Length: 320
Ligand code: UDP
Ligand code: MG
Image 1 (cartoon, rainbow, N blue to C red):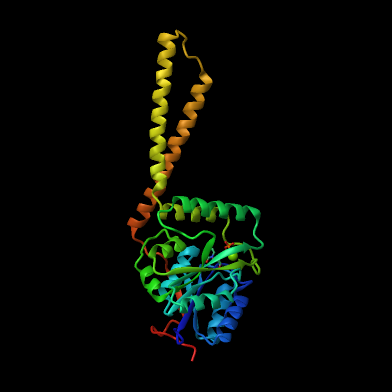
Image 2: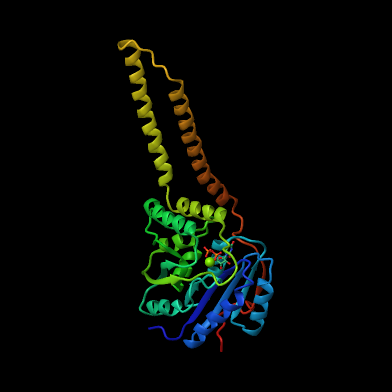
C-alpha cells in the first residue's frame, strides 16, 4: 500500500479560458479532500485566449501548479506527451480541461493503483451531451480499430487514465512522432485494469476536435498500430487479378465458342472507373504510411516550449 506518494495530474488546454479555473478548483478539491500531495501540469497547447494568463495567475498562488506553454498548437496528443515527459509523480493522471472527465473518478483510480495496478483507464459507460454524429463515429472507430490493431486497445476509452511511474518511464522511451497515446499506453503492457464512468457534458466552450482533427486522429490510431490496411490492399489486388482472369476467360469463350462479341461500353467504363478508384485509394494508403516514415526521418523535436512556469526546481515539488 502506497500511502506517501506524489500525484501528477496532466491537463492539456487549448482555448479553454471558459473552464480552466473551474477545472483547477475541481481538481484541487479532490486533492485536498484526500490529502494527497499533488502536482498539476497544465500544457497550454498554443491557445491565444486568456487560458495562459489565467494559468499564470493560478500558478502564482499555487506553486504545485506547473505550466508548459507551447510555441504553437501541437495537438492534444503531443500536449499529453509533454505532460508525461515532465511528470515527476509516483502516479500520473491525464484528464481533459473541460471537466468532461469527473475529477472524483481519480479517487477510484488511485484505489486501483494502490491495489497494485500500473494502468487504470476509465471506460465510458455513457457520454452525455455529444452529438449523435460523434457518438456513432466514435463507436465505429473503436470497433474498427479493435479489428485492425495488432494489440488490444480498449474500446470506448479516452486518454483519461492513471499510469504508474514505471509506465511513464516506458512511455518516455517511445520517440515516435505520430502519437496515439491511448494505444501506446496499451502497448507497454504491465498490469492494466479499468473502471467505468459516465462522461459528462463539456462545462463550457466548444469541442476542440472538429471533424478534420477527428479524422487525422483516427487515421493516426489505425496506421500507428496496424499494418493490416496494407495487407488488405494486397489481398484486394490479388482478388482483382483473379476477377480479371475470369472475365478474360468469359470473353474468349463468348467470342470463339458462342460466337457472340461481347458488347458493353457501360460495363467497361464502370469497371475502369471502379478499379482506378481502388488503385488511387491504395496508392493514397501507401502514401499515408510513407508520409509517416518521412515525418519520423526528419527527426524534428516533437514540440517546442516557449515558457515553463514553476519548474525551476528540477526535483520533486511537494505541497508542503
Ligand atoms: N486539446 C489540446 N489541443 C488541441 C485540441 C484539444 O490540448 O489541439 C485539449 C482540450 O483543451 C481538452 C482536451 O484536449 O482539454 C480534449 O479536447 P476536447 O474536449 O475539445 O475534445 P472532446 O472531448 O470534444 O473529444
Ligand atoms: Mg471534451
